[in-house]
Image (cartoon, rainbow, N blue to C red; front, side, top):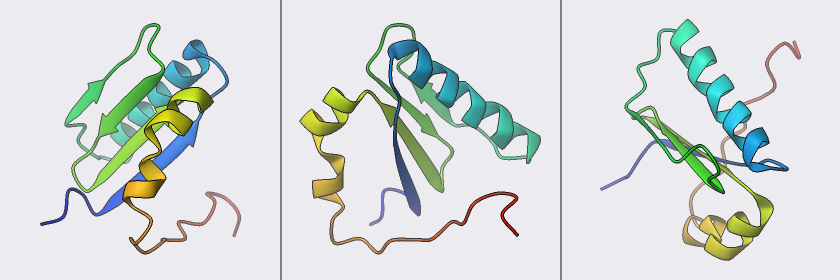
Length: 88
């Protein structure tokens, strides 16, 4: 059974930066009519997770991303090219 259809892993430069990135994900998702299941972490955290059901976004400080190495767990999963908004 799949945990989610898509997983996004991103890094920020500070706790404040990852909070801002996660907040932007939530705002943009809501503007597109996407329901937010939960947001875990925040404040001075080194890892924030935004769960939107079909898509889970992990925003982490580089040290946390290296320590938890989520890419290793999902290395056999296919990559999806999401493109870049506004690049067309």
